[in-house]
Length: 81
Image 1 (cartoon, rainbow, N blue to C red):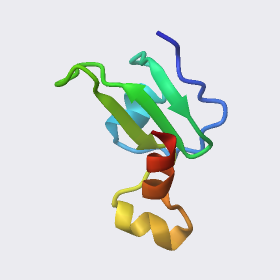
Image 2: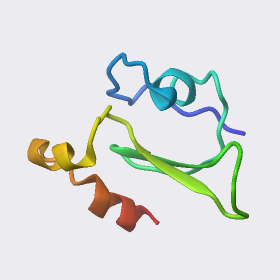
Image 3: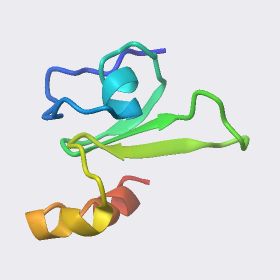
Image 4: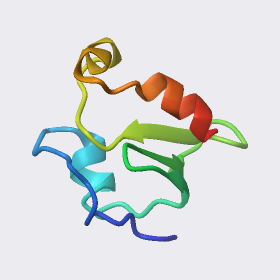
């Protein structure tokens, strides 16, 4: 498994699983694809044969609030897959 490159991240310090474990490298993930804004990786405990998680690199509490900040994660996530 490759360690996620955290050099490019613009994450804020939060009490978030992805921030605290995935992006910090405490949990290693197999990266599927990465953009400046999103990271797609295989789920560490998949429920399905093909289970990919796509998360924004910037901490977002609600996706509905991301668009008002110029972050269209949903469109980018569909483009990613």
